[in-house]
Length: 116
Length: 408
Image 1 (spheres, each protein chain N blue to C red):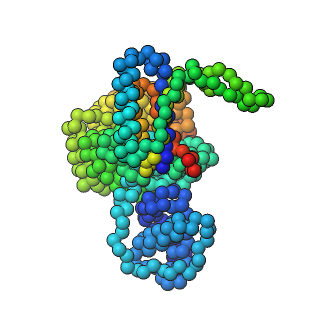
Image 2 (cartoon, rainbow over the protein chains, first blue to last red):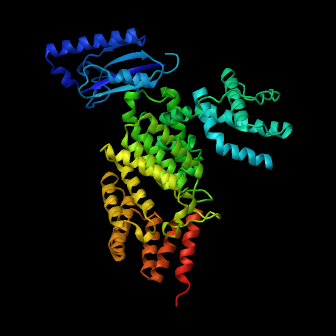
Image 3 (cartoon, one colour):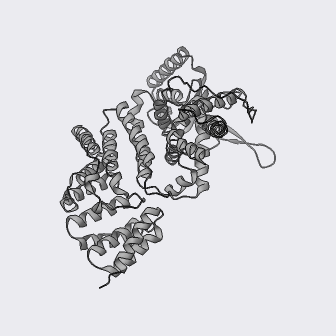
């Protein structure tokens, strides 16, 4: 089955990191992605820029309306994702548990709909 | 009619075991239930014609698996041809079904399911309870339970929750919910919420069997041992607790020579092993209470002082009104009955047990022992308003009659 691992956290914590700390986390993510690749689980992955760069296009009030900012103001923001293919939820959770750079925050594990 | 009874008996003895195997085979709760229903229907038709096979459980299992496999191949075809040949009466060794039910237990208890859904699903698939029975046990509308079951089954299917015992390193974090669900199944067997008889021995036996497998899986879990000990010690009194007519016999009136000494010995031994691990928990405390009752030669011989102390300990782990009620009663038995009445009055005033029949029942029991017959009758009648189990109701009716008659 295909799953997306959605990485949520407080982006202010990431913003406050030193370049050395950031470099360590990037290296960990590269190793993590390679491990996924070797296990035959890796499909794709991207880091997202902070929500300060986000633009939302809102629907439901006549013409689509473009506004500054993310869809929702929350304590944890979406920071990136991995799409993987593994036999079942247990394996997806096992990968989620190994997500690098997580001192707090959440990794949401969602199955992709059929056809993905 | 005779055939109907055989099939009914089969549903009770082999149904859940076969269902667990079918769920693993199909990976789908609904498909498994459908296949089993179809197999029951075919059994009735075929056995009417050809007689009952020597091993009806194995016959049923084989047919159900064929139906399931056939439907997986052709999911759109609703009905299958009637002329599917009867399976031979010889069968290969049954598959390791015991493992199937353990797998199913862990699937039902997967943390990706909401706790209420875990319990409902386990009672449905492992306990064989109907949606209505589960709703009664949880004191919620039947539609709520039905919705919970549908959502849980859908999540298992769509999120890909596997049918497997989790890897070893995951067991410690999964064990608590597994023990909780086994405890629930056992209790439903010990006092059925909604059944003609007081107990459902098949549920107690199944819970004990699964608890044994769980202990074998994680022998270093003191609480798993404690739960198994609690079940064995409680189940040891089963025969003495119910009359042949299905009436409830209170602990004080039970013929203690009918308690199963072998189970008491095993339960006590397991509890000793658990306590030696120095990792205490609520199941061990409850097992210790059960062990004290079991070792008393007569009601008067009961060590209520220790039992009261253990209930106070239990309150720290499980601070619920029901445990508090038991704690109050034990305290009263250890000190004085009026002290228990004071405690019950405090609980009553708080109102969070307003729907729980055992509060007025306990009050009636203490008043009866104090010789306050009229007040006891009022309390027993209040308990009758709330009790649902027929055997418990008959017991309360007898108590009302006892304290209402012989007023001289």
